[in-house]
Structures are given as C-alpha cells and as structure tokens.
Length: 325
Ligand code: SAH
Image 1 (tube, helix red, strand yellow):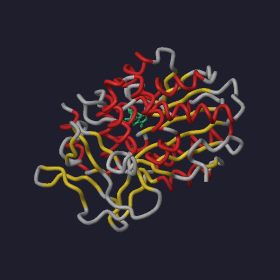
Image 2: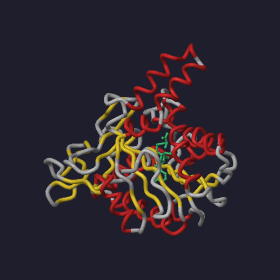
Image 3: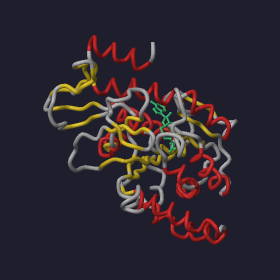
C-alpha cells in the first residue's frame, strides 16, 4: 500500500498527535526525494547563492582561528541537504588552514547520495550521539524546523483524526502553544558535546525568540503553501523554531549561547554587501542576479527578518562573529 494510504489507515484506526504526523510525513518525504531548488519544493539560503555558505564559512573560520586553530577540529553539519553549504563554507575554512574531516548527520538516503557526490570522504551519522569526540565546527541550517513539534489547544494536545473520510485536526480551536522535545533534546546533546570537547554551532532557521506563539505548522509543495493535511509525505512540513527553548536546553547542558539575531542583520554585519560587490565586479553579466540574491538573503521582505541565527559554544571558545553583545 502507498505511504499516504497506510498512514490514513493508521489515523482512521487510532488518530495520532500532530507531533507523530509531522514525524511520519517528513520521514517519508525526505527519504524519498531531493526536495531542494527550483525543480523541487523549496529553496534554502545556500541554494540561493554561494554567498550564504561563504559567510557561514568565514564566521566559522574566524572562530576556529580565535580558538587557537585546534588541529583535531572537525566540520559538522546537521541536515546538509545537497551539501552545497558545506562546499561553500569549507572553501573558506580550508583557506585559513583548517584541514579536519567532514561529518554529516543525515537520515535521508536520497540526500546522503546527493551529499556523497560533492563530499565523497565525508562521514555520515544517523544522530548527534555518534559525532566524533573532538572540537566541532557545527552548522544547522533549516534543520530544526523539520523536526516534529507538539501543538496544544488549551491543555489538550492537538491530534490528526479521520472525519468524513478526510484528515482533520482535533480538538478545534486556536493553538495556544507549540513545543518540540525532539528539537530541545538534540540542542541539549549537541551542547553537551560542545561543552565537553570544545567547538561552536551556528543554528540558522526561521523562528522566534520570545513573543507570541501561535500555530506555525506549514506545508510547502512546489514552492507554494498547501494545507498541511492535504498531502502527507508529499509536502515539506515545518514549524517555526523556538530559539529560547533551544538556548535553555543548551545552557542546561553546560554550553554558552549567543544572542539571537536576524539572518539579515548577521549576514550584513559579516560583510555580505562587500562580498556581493566583489562577486558582481568579477562577473558583471551576473551583477543584477547577485544584487537580487543579496536582497533575498538579507532584506525584510526576503529571508532577512523571519530567519534567525544563534550560536551555541564551549565556554572557552569565542562567541562567533556577528553574534556578540
Ligand atoms: N541544510 C540544507 C537542507 C535543509 S532541508 C540547506 O540549507 O539546504 C532539511 C535537511 O534535514 C535535509 O537534509 C533532511 O534530510 C534533514 N533531516 C530532516 N529531519 C532529519 C532528522 N530527524 N535527522 C537528520 N536529518 C534530518
């Protein structure tokens, strides 16, 4: 039977929490395709422009140097997609003498195959628990938003049920709160690793740091928002990341966290503007595209405000550039 048919049978029999629905749908979705780019369902920052990975790489390279360039450090990415961000970031890291190995945490066989084409010597892991015991330079871009989240209507957990032959949410009403223990658990374990072995992580995602919480569950297919219940396993399900919850978990694990700032602010502080000018100078025929890519990455009507950046780091490591007080 098809994935969707099987899932609907399970829901018709028992219903399931929104959390379990996201987990099941995304596991099938990511395992069965490469969803990124124009021909796919959504486009991420590293797929928009090489400048994004370069800024991430420059930030990690600076952090690595200020930490004394530990010879045993490794590059590590969570949910690396096509491996594009790793390629662009590692160019900068290699440029400052970083020669460590590449470790990827990735569960999708389809995306692992894509990553292997660009990074044949990388080492893959199913979970953050298996990462090597050494200082890590970690990036997680649009990783946490794909993890399952619980939603609550009052005190009651929101579920997906079958009603008149169609999937529906139960109970009805406004979502008062969301909580992802999968996300905070991963943040805790990453932070515990950093606190013990050294290193720093950049967490980049769309999300919030305080303020009002609401229903942030959304589904995207072919670059359009669709009803999250309309195509289980065939659309990308995400929720906004609660950066305050991640920071709290990371601190409990003994790591430090930076402030949370907008992606636009961070990229411009790191020098996205001058980098765009240099690239455009070297490629005059692409100058308009490069200017448009910069706007998409950092302006308020692009990804600039919605996306946030936060670092988690060992107390002896410097706060990564652009994220200090
Ligand atoms: N960071 C990439 C891709 C983002 S899409 C980019 O910016 O382009 C989300 C990524 O997380 C995919 O690689 C997906 O396969 C991976 N992923 C989703 N859930 C995961 C999980 N539970 N464990 C490990 N990887 C996961």
